Every structure is written in structure tokens, then in C-alpha cells.
Amino acid sequence: MSTSQALNQLRHQQAQQTAPVLATDLTSEFTETQVFNTSAGDIPVYSRWPHFHAATGMVINLHGNGFIYPHTDRDALFCKQLCLAANVAVFDVDYPLAPEHPFPIPLMAAFETVQKIQDRYREQLGWPTLIGHSTGGNLAVGTQLLALRQGKPLAQQVILDCPLLDLDADPLTKRLPHTACSSASLGAVQATVDYYRPQGETDNVLISPSKATTADLTNFPETFLLTADQDPLLTEGEAFGQQLIAAGSKVTVRRYANSHHGFTVAGTGNSALALHDIAALLD
Image (cartoon, rainbow, N blue to C red; front, side):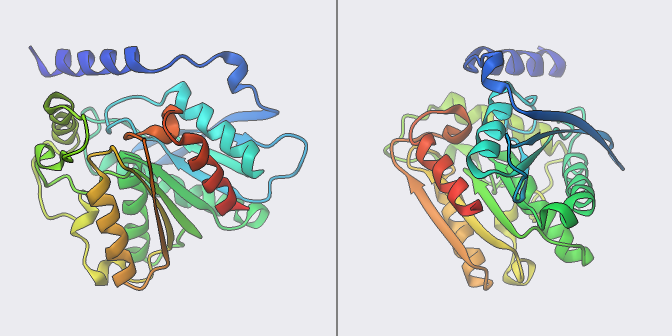
């Protein structure tokens, strides 16, 4: 099977597993698609604004889906729910996908787009909260590491939702004793890593933020880190929280029971509680 055929098969399987979302679920008072020009090309951003009241802040959302899977209706529904629950404008960044666009292209696209959104809306909405889900959490951390290196503005706070932060480790070593995660699904994680990092580069903190030093993380924004007790990425997520604390950042880590990887966007497990907690943080 060719690389292209394998990729199409993975994307088809992901689409088949995605729960349907009704068009009425996505209805909002005001939505628009903006395009931001970056060194990686034109990046679509789907913005959502709350009903009836002026937005009191902004969130920049980086979806998950393993670096290789497209933005979905579930991502859009999460952004709509967050927009209305917290009365904030949500800017949902549709960054380019691997393997057509391997590292560092998605990261640079996300970084430049975040900077442009901040520049355009900060006077109206204040400094943003940046939220990243799974691989989007990886990119969210990377955008802030780049901002620290370049002396660029940081997000007000960062929310990491079941983030994938260690691409150097063999995914098969991440299985937790009490989870039902199969070797096949963990093998699929390795496939997405290989697509994103085709040269196999290791020890790069912009690929694996878990490799960051205290110096790398000094002055990192306040962070809220969500983990799930049935997620193989639980350990690396919570360990990264400890790294941030050691670097002097204010960090809240909350583990959600009876929940699997991606539960917040999938609407499973304790997703309602997680959404409530995120909205309360933005209040």
C-alpha cells in the first residue's frame, strides 16, 4: 500500500468514527471565515461570536486530530458551545496538515496566525486564551515557545486538553495498565507522528515540548491542563504540568474520571464538566 493510500485509509476510518453533528447544532448568531496570510500560505480561521451580548474576551482554538486529520464538525461544535457558555469570541484555526505539510509548517502557520489574531483583536477583546486539543496542544505550546524565543506577545493563558507532548517516546510505552487502549490504536499514533516528523528528528522541543528545559519554559503563560484517566497521554500531560511549575508558571492540572482521549471535543465521558470548567476559567 502506498503512503497516499495509507493516509486516505486513516482519514476515512477517522471520518467513519466521528459522531454526526446536525446543522442546527452549529447555528450561531454570527460566524465568519477569515483568511490570514502566513509563510505557510493562507490559513482559514472560523470565528464565532456570542448571541445578543458583546464578547468579553477571545479564545484561539487549535484542533487536534493527530496532525493529519481535517477539522471536523465536532471541532466546530465545541467552539460554538464554548463561545456561548463563556460569552467569548472563538477563533478556530484550520492549520495545514501533514504529511503534505510536515513539521515545521503546521507550527509556523499556527504561530503566525495566533500573532495576527492577537494584533487584530486585542484592543477590542484583550489578550487571548489559547486552547489546544491533543496535537493542537502540542502546537499551542510550540507557539508560546516561539514567542518566548522571538520576544513576541504571549497568550494571556493556555489551556491544554489531553496534549500530545512527547513524540520521541514509543507510543506502545504509553499504554496505562488500567486502560483498554489497544496496540493497534497506539500504533496509529506512531503513524501520525511519522507523518508529522518524517525525518525522525528527536530532542527538538518544538516537536516534543516535554523535552523543554526550565530555561525554555521560564515566563510561560498561566496554564490549565486537562487530562483524562483513560488516556495513554495522561502521564506526559501531567508531567509537563510539573515542568511548568518548576519553571515558575502558575498551573492547574485537572484529571477527569471515566474519560478517554479527546473526550472534551467528542462529547463523551466528563465532557460537560470539562466545558463548564473551561468556561469558568474564562469568566
